[in-house]
Structures are given as C-alpha cells and as structure tokens.
Amino acid sequence: MSNHPLISYVEEARWRGMSNKQILDSLISAGWQVHDLTNVFLDHIEIFHEPITTESKENIVTVRNISKIYNKTIKALDNISLDVKRGSVTALLGPNGAGKTTLVRILATLLTPEHGSARVAGFDIIRDAQKLRSVIGLAGQYAAVDESLTGRENLEMVGRLYHLSALSARQRAEELLQQFDLDDAGDRILKTYSGGMRRRLDLAASLVVRPQILFLDEPTTGLDPRGRFALWHVIRELVKDGTTVLLTTQYMEEADQLANKIFVIDRGSIIAQGTADELKKQVGGDVLELHVADRSFINEAVGVITQFGNEVPHINEDTNIITMAVTGGTSVLVDVVRKFDVANIKINDIVLRRPSLDDVFLTLTGHTAE
Image 1 (cartoon, rainbow, N blue to C red):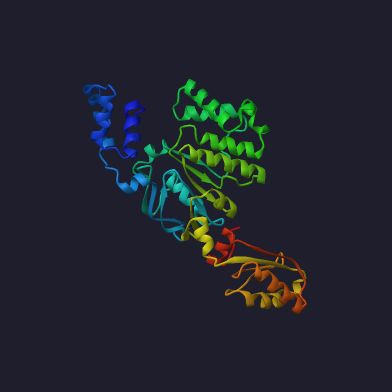
Image 2: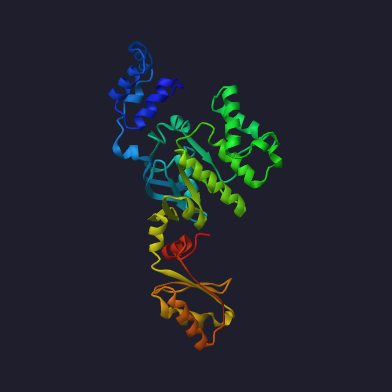
C-alpha cells in the first residue's frame, strides 16, 4: 500500500467504522479537491472493496480452525479458534511445546497453516501477507538485534529496512530510546547491554513502525524479577497508548498481571479461556499448600488432607509439598493442624492462598505449565 497520507487516513478511518461516504465527506470538508481524491483512489481502489463488520471492528485478530502439522504426523496446532479484542492484552498460556509460538508465527506470516484461516488487522494472513507485515510488530523469545552495533544504530537499521528515510529513522530511534529508558545507553555497543536492556531494545525495534498489534513471544524469558517487572510496565504503557498485545508465556504470574483474556493451550489445543479470575474459579475454592517435614509420611499426610477437599491432592515429590483446593476459609487451617497433631505428622509450613493460574493448569491437565 502506498505511503500517501490520504491512503493512511482512509485505512485508519475505515477501522474506526466510518463508511466510504463519511470518509469522502470528511476529506472534502478538510479542503481536498475531488479531482485530487479521484487520482489517488483510482490507484488504490482495493481499500474500498471489503466492508468492515461489527465483529472485525471489535476484534483485531480472528482465528478460525487453524491447524499446523509437522512431518505429516505431529500436530503442533489442532483446530484452534480465538479472537483478540482491539486495545487489549491477550495471553496464550502453556508449557513448552504447547503450540503457542507456532500460532504466533502463523499470525505473523512466518508459517503457513495446513487448515483454517485467520485475519489480523483486517488482512488475510496468507493472501495479504505483505500488507499485513507493515502493520504488525513481533518480538521473539530471543533478542533479534545486532551485538556489533549500538542501540541507536540497531533501531535506525530497522527503520531503514521499513523504508523510512534516514532522517525519519533517526528521529524514531531517538523517540524509542527515550520511551524505553535507553537514551543514556543509546550510543553503547550492544555487547555491553544487560539482558533486560537487550529485551527492551528488541521490544523497541518491534515498534519502529507503530504497529496496530504487537506479538510478544515469551518476552521476559531469561530476565530476573526486576527486569521482568520493568518490561511489564513497558507493556502496560504501550496498551495505554492504544497498541494491542498478543503474548505467549509460561509464567502464571505474567498472564495474571497483564492479560485481559487468557487462552490456556496444551498439546496444540485450547483447553480453557477466560479472565484470570474466571480461570481461577475453575479450581473451586482456596488452595491449601502443606510442606511435610519427613518424606516417609507423605502418604499418611495425603490421607489426612483428603478429608478437607473433594479432589485428589497433588504431591510434589521434589519438595514434599502437597496442594489441594479446599473450602471453608481460614478456619480450615486450624482443623488441618489439629488433625496432623493427632496423626503425629510434622509440618514445616502450611499456607492457605488464592488459586494461581498454575493451580488452574494443574486442575485442567494434571500437570503444571512449567
């Protein structure tokens, strides 16, 4: 699509829901001459072809029955369907190998599905792949930056690859260095950057062209807690400015902290979806977490704790920690401690907490998402 300002205006206006007549009336009111509009739009008549439905205005991503098969036998994705609302953060939550990265790569036009269809920002991921790439940003699991260049040079290079002028690329690089608190390090070679700084620079590079939607594939992988919290803050600020974010993560807390909606993926299929609170309700109550001092008493401890819930307790063999959903609030703690005293089973620690998304994943699949 041309970079002509009229075309950019029409595309933005259509996604705000304006009809063709409203767009033309607005342009004429702004002083554009009819013959000027005709000359431009005759070369780009395709932007008027497809009416925007109510659903497509609300959802920036629409996925229907997407499947991806490797080596003719391995189903990385199995009939996936989902929608992503504009201006939201949507999380794909699941363990390694669940299919999260495969779906992101398909939506970013890096892979082609065997079956199904998807539209991103109004573009078909296969038929309109070239146009789609101009309105999306992607930050993968590993920083896609050049260690031999400075931070500023990396951002300018990305801008030039997107056909920005040298001046525009320099200006955009400066804006992003300031936005991501990297202006003091902008002229340093990337080899001197910390892991968190590299991730912020990688995220900045994905925003050079101000994408409508940003795909983040496990954005905080390898970061320490401080770096993770800093990147969460950046993501929240991007959403405040109108960017839609679709992220993949293995971190329960990350999805809980950032996402408006979560899709839980396991073995290529969506097994649950909802807000963090909606998913937590599936566990059915608070979670009792109990650390048994002596491993040899684990089975006896399970027999005691089972009296306080309606499910089979989960045992972590490595830590001697037993978890189970319970009802009854804090009064359960007193009753459990009494029962363990009577059974003469020593407890190192006992906690009653709200269910985490890890508990939800355990309930749904029988294993954690780690």
